[in-house]
Each structure stands twice: as structure tokens, then as C-alpha cells.
Length: 177
Image (cartoon, rainbow, N blue to C red; front, top):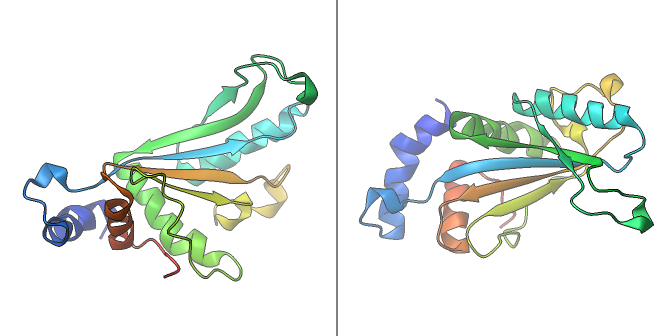
């Protein structure tokens, strides 16, 4: 069963009872998943191309190239320079990506003991950082130009961190408690 189907049929009714919610529309759910990959080497266009290709393979969606919003002379950065790429996943794709993240990618990290529950932002959204893209099974070592990290932000409709925690725990997020 897909994670989205499981959420609709099993998890949402259970969360409604567990959180004491009367209206079905108040049950917390995942709105979107944002995957952001910064490129440290702006002078080498192959690094950015590699990041775009890797993010496309990981998410199944073509990323948007992000550009610098202001100039910083210490970093030799000019407005409009490409500095990274990001993908916003919604609906079925977001749940499918989360399923792979929870069950394949995170447990595949060496010495993985779960993630901290303190990375919530105060509004029920959770951000996790990965140090390299090789943890995804779609990425092959010989195709990588440069190992890069990424930030994955899970945006929910939860009103506070407790609701966000309960939602992610019900979806199968590997917390270390």
C-alpha cells in the first residue's frame, strides 16, 4: 500500500482520535517536501549540471536552478550567479519520496540511530540535512561530479511541533527516542 493511501485510510483517522480533533480538515498532513541542494563551486558548471541530474533522479522531478539574490564580494558572488537547485514535491510525489526517505535512504546511512526530534521549527515543519547524495540508491558513484549535501524540509499543516512530531512518527519517520 502506498504511503498516501495508508495516510488517508489508517493514519488520519487515528490522528484525529489521538489528538482530540473534531473536524477532519484539522488533522495534520504533509503539504510539501522541499529538497534543496547548494553548489559550493560556482565556477565549474559541471557541478551544477551534476546536482540537477542527481536531484532529478532522486525526486523524479526536474529542479529549479536557484540564483544569488545579492552580491557578496568575499565569496566572489554576483547577483544572478547560479548557486544551487531545489525541488518542491507535493501530493503523491511527496508521500512517495518520504516513503523512500524513511524506509531506504535514512536506514542506509552508516551508524544511523534515528534523527533528533528537536529539528522542528516551532510550526510543525521538520528539516533534515544529508551530507551526501550517495545515500539514495538511484545515484551511482561513477556519475557523481562532486559529493554534495542537501536539506530536506517537510512542510506540514500541524499547528505546533507536537502535532508535527505525532504526524511524522505515524508516517514512519525514524526518530531516536
